[in-house]
Amino acid sequence: MSQEVLVKIKESLVNLDLDRTIDFVKKAIEYGVKPIDIINVLADGMKIVGDLYERGVYFVADLIIASEIFKEIMNILEPLIMREKEVLKPIGRVVIGTVEGDIHDIGKNLVTTMLRANGFEVIDLGVDVSPQKFVDAVKQYKPDIVGMSALLTSTMINMKKVIEALEKEGLRDKVKVIVGGAPLTEKFAKEIGADAYGENAVIAVEICRKLVEELRRSRY
Ligand code: B1M
Image (cartoon, rainbow, N blue to C red):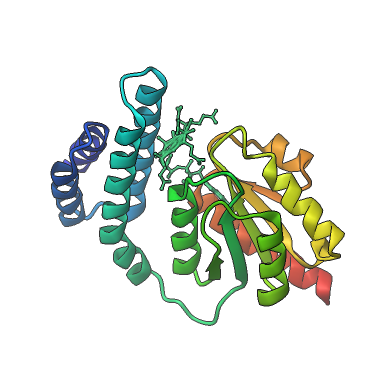
């Protein structure tokens, strides 16, 4: 039953049907499906929407509708995710943003939610964030981790510019850097000098935990 409802959620999102997606998400919650499993099928659905766009079946307006549906569902799931976790003293502080030239924020928001739900303090700089803005935020908030997201092959290289800007300001050694987003790879992350690549939001949380531990060990 749960598997069936998850398929329906994905289909309704791909068909850009807000009401049906909400109905099936509510059913899934009733059946006891975990929020993260719902998020995973929604993310799969977004990939299909992207493929339909690439094939000329869907247009940018359809991508916008799909992202609005995703955000509506996140409004339902977020309180459940936050309730699942007991947030005590912050584990660490993360400054996060989507890099310059890029306005995709669903993945970044998801990472932010999962980090917050797992006890991190997150300062979200939003989208289209310039290297200077990242640098200023590091100076202001003194985070343990800088997180960057990019969804376009044309903007992922801007992550390197942020790392270079941090180096130039003498801040690179003070923070760990994690990058993520659909077009990225582990290899790319290494090449640009990031400390880690997060394939998805759940993995990103685990990596951030390890990065904070590493940072604390190197400080003492
Ligand atoms: Co755009 N778009 N889009 N889009 N869009 C893609 C990325 C694309 C692959 C679609 C396609 O052609 N198949 C394509 C990029 C092609 C390329 O670069 N080679 C594309 C394009 C071309 C464009 C425009 C140029 C279209 C146009 O205007 N002609 C334009 C660019 C605008 C800009 O940024 N300057 C554009 C615009 C948009 C909308 C605004 C309409 C909308 C975004 C709305 C929003 O975000 N508020 C949109 C959407 C929705 C998509 C697709 C369909 C879905 C993206 C998404 O939200 N996925 C996307 C197709 C695709 O990705 N296959 C596409 C769901 C989300 C949960 O996944 O973001 O990958 P994702 O996040 C994952 C992981 O990557 C990871 O965790 C998340 C899940 O657990 N992760 C991190 C992400 N960030 C992380 C950071 C971390 C760690 C992990 O650490 C810090």
